[in-house]
Length: 283
Ligand code: PRT
Ligand code: ZN
Image 1 (tube, rainbow, N blue to C red):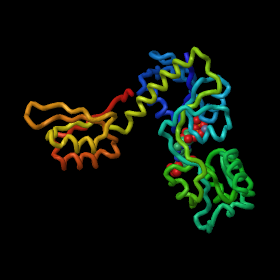
Image 2 (cartoon, rainbow, N blue to C red; image 1 turned 180 degrees about the vertical axis):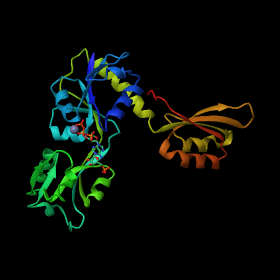
Image 3 (cartoon, rainbow, N blue to C red; image 1 turned 90 degrees about the vertical axis):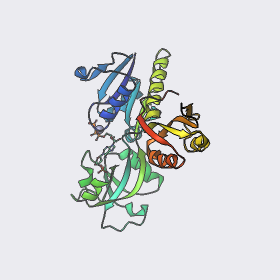
């Protein structure tokens, strides 16, 4: 049995639960209080505030954790990043009142900066030789300049909408973040195969995300061109059709490239193109 810590509620909870579900792990929703147990995998799920996850993994109370990289960096906890998970993307940035002239980092000398991430900020300022004071506040950091509590802020930015609506502008992107899967410094031998199995499942899920299965009828003479358009995992599958001179071609494409590929395939004579959802990609 291994134990994974995930956020109990908040921005990462839903995607963390979805990752477990897509990996074929069922958790009894009704029992989702503090400690849950999967019915079909040797896994316990510990639901915590995100701030507590790095420490709990570092001290071995949980074997794995899913948390924002920003929290890992701020905690300084001794953990290893096993995977970047591709959700919860955001960044930690410095922002100043939009009417201020900003001409580089020296702007911050002698200024007060409000943040909930003092450790990451201190290390960034020290590295760049900037002498600014840090006002640690929890929550609503973006109102600090208007409230006269600080000159600037250092906070999480995603779309940037919160900064704009508070009369601020982003001037330095300091740390790029996304949800990460973390592990503690020591994992007992009996747990390693379970963790490896879970990683294999997570990798299959992430390989299938953002991809589509595509199949079409194609003149056999166009197969060579189609292979150039659709490289696939090894190469596309080609099957003869009952009608002479035609074949059926199957492949996998990135969703972001789908429409460009479809255009190119139509030009070389592809017909009856079907695009299907992909459930898992097993390497
Ligand atoms: O209760 P608990 O302590 O567990 O949760 P929390 O309130 O501390 O964190 P939560 O749920 O808000 O965020 C969890 C994690 O999601 C963060 O640690 C980040 O890794 C990640 N994440 C991704 C974000 C955002 N995007 C985000 N936009 N966390 C916070 N925000 C905030 C940001 O601070 C800003 O004030 O959302 C606001 C809107 O952002 P814009 O730029 O889109 O306007
Ligand atoms: Zn938190």
